[in-house]
Image (cartoon, rainbow, N blue to C red; front, top):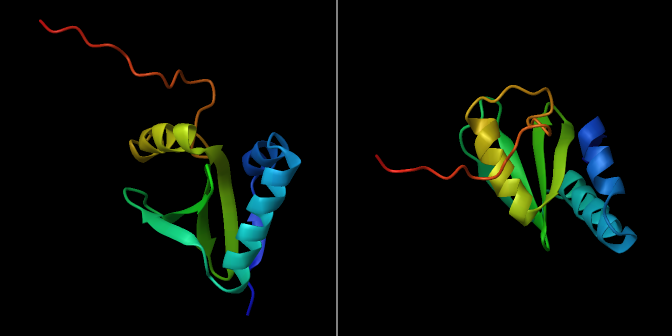
Length: 112
């Protein structure tokens, strides 16, 4: 039985920014996990509600499963996905899991 797919507002915005060919590829991969549960999937650690990562080329789809529904949280390039997911696990508040106004660059620490 196929699960229904729910895209968050942020995930819809993310996928609109992708080139058409890449967006279609991501949509097909999401359909594949909804129907057959197949794909390059890894469960992410450190989230209260289990989150998963689907790898689609250079793109990472972060999602969670609720009952028989797959909720797509974000679609990010790999260089952004891992940088931002660490902040989400540390409890930085945001309804979508990320605060887009936050400066995600690493702060340089000076030794004392």
